[in-house]
Length: 386
Image (cartoon, rainbow, N blue to C red; front, side, top):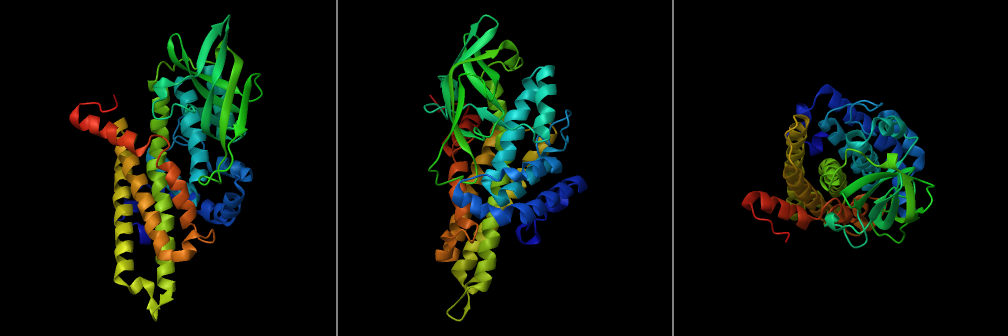
């Protein structure tokens, strides 16, 4: 966190290793990603050529232990996510899906053979994963999923559709969740499996520098050893979502910081009525509000990270932080856009790109409404979902 956006000196609370992670990822984003992101965003593509570099930095599954993973703290993972999303939500999503939504369930719920086969390859970037939970008709209510898996001899037959799947067309392996007679179970479905197809979703106005897909499973036969043996019930995929939401808590701050810094630099340089617009009271009000919300979000994220490192973080704490930080990051982006005026909609500046991305981040991995009601239930003891 640069001094201009670290008003409460949160960086001083980081360990030397965590600061090294942050500076390393920040340098990568500055030197390798920011020069190319606008072009990829405009074309609707993800820069696959950077995947080996992300792996060399050690970002894939960096908070996991063993199998080639870096085994770093959750705060280190958090500051990495912040710097990645300072580049673009699509970049942080790529890393988050790989580590938190694909490597994590294999690491926690997989067999030893599954771990040995997939985790080292995913950590090195040789294999890319995707996470198949959301369906066309079931997003906020994953327990209602229509995808089914049935036994046929020693195999499983999967039928269903998953939608809005990040990295779907890039993935070598998909973690697919389906309903069975014994409840919800997870399966590893390899690319090229008969009856399995990924179709890229086009015409997006958000998350354009990211590959988003639909997964089609039509009588897709997988052997019994493709089932995740430790994944029993809906709690398994929800635990994966909590891992990913933690990254979003930090990542949203990165997007907000990029927007704030862009607005601050612009306001100091832009002259109207014979003075920089940074000298006008209403502009200073916007900047003060933006920095205040970023600072509050940083403190929320840091404490959540330390609780997670101590094994004390709860799902509802993650919900509160995701709800707050994404909501406020989106407001920061909107205020920044207003300071930049017409230039705010240009890809020459990062603001509108982040603003459009955050509209997606606001609703994925749990909508604002779902996280609000999860918090409401924790407060009152009464569920408002049904």
